[in-house]
Length: 336
Ligand code: PBG
Image 1: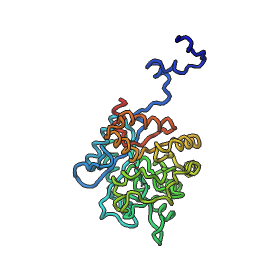
Image 2: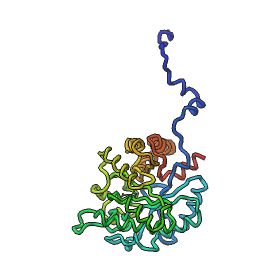
Image 3: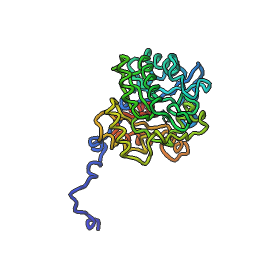
């Protein structure tokens, strides 16, 4: 008899999951277009968009197409973009000197976007990897065995001023050198850019999930390997406490926003940092996370739209206020 199996329960959590309206009432985390920053790749010339094979739906854009894309993103309610340049190989050298060129591609891109869509927040990466032949984020020491911290920081501080002058709202040092946030803050202030903010890649791990991005900016090819080792400056993926220390240091040095990267495989770090600091927390759902979902969907093994949504929801639930994601445009369209 069915009655025999009637449990005498006080707690029945399923009561709140019974109907769609009860489920809506009790939903804890909600994604909105305003949560997202769209990363975009820009390239010289007037050519057609250059698709990136390992990142379906993502292309390198010329300046005109970039501006068009920015208008579309703003219309969808995306508040911000993060810009990455792909340089011609012949413009790269050991020292990454094009990073300090007054009229470099990234600066022209920033000016074009700020002119056409001034309300859009523009973020730029502060690191040397798109500019160096070796693909490292900084300049090498005399023996060529490691990235030299202090000399790199001096270059990044100068680079930040050029970006601020071009109209960037937030500079985003992604190099993981020690002391770069305070050096950038002081240099920006001294140059009259106290309004320019710093979104620090604070807990950036030495991850294998950056492979497709390195195809996109060409930092992989130049180095001859997609898995260039950055372990002397990026964090050890095994370390939780070290990541929290980095975030605390960056806030103390003047970071306005701290970032964790990658995002999906590092949800524990997002939560730890959320608890440890009071500044806004950003997380970067990186190229490899995006590629994974696309690859499985292409094989018919996962549902693209649902995994896209769930992956981003998990990142927000873990504690991220802001998410950098290549899904930004599609998500904003879906959420409307
Ligand atoms: C480099 C940089 C990287 C990414 C953003 N800035 C790659 C790296 O550290 O090699 C990765 C982003 C992604 O994988 O989507 N300064």
